[in-house]
Image 1 (cartoon, rainbow, N blue to C red):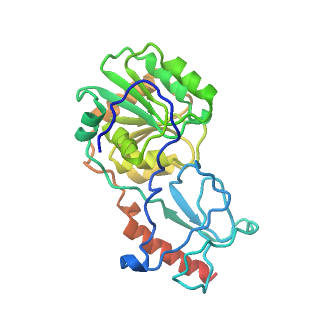
Image 2: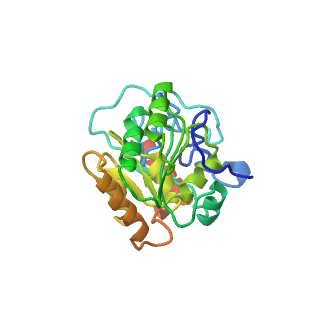
Image 3: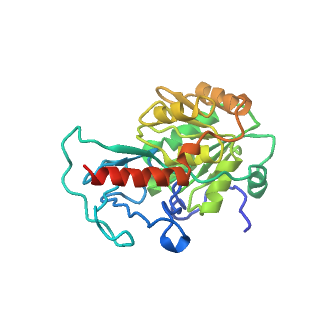
Length: 295
């Protein structure tokens, strides 16, 4: 399938997928695997960021976390929905935390070729459904304060409101180094954007977890994120060669230093995400269900 080259802003829908959104958690009997385990997600909005960790805690939904609510003793081949979550249990009730799955990596050189990006340029990327707290206009204004001609900034994703779209377009206007793709990104296009970037920049004003950060790491791209929420835990998990954090407001100096870090820091060919592979997570999920049924 041909990919479109990056270009100025256009109209469109939302972002094609969250990290791992289209992948089955467990294979069903028809695929030769164990029976599929259904997941209850009461109150989870479509655009809620995919969490870095999944909490297994019967009968409770917490913002930014997925809740697995098994029905002990049910037919293991059942495919129907689970009951809605009940009242939250008292604080201190035991829980099991499971990592969130990330998809496999994609080629980088091919992605740049499909998008029409120069091989020698340093490419910074922000991708995902754009809400005000993600600070995209500020990222654009900060990038414009960098004089380097060999740097590019790509913004991909659907703004939440027309006003936010207009603010982003106004912030980018007049700088040929900035490319906007403000619309629906199919899964393949989203993957190409991340694979083509040198650094994924996510300057959130507030955040618990980031599915975009996990997607970037799964495609072996380093990320720059604020020192907030579970992003500190993610940095500790994969190491400082893959996740760089900053405090306060994103500045031109932080952005310049991060671009140099992303380009020049020696790192393995693949980010250390083996603990998030589906076979490992499937075993953990089954064990968590069994543990929960004994509580």
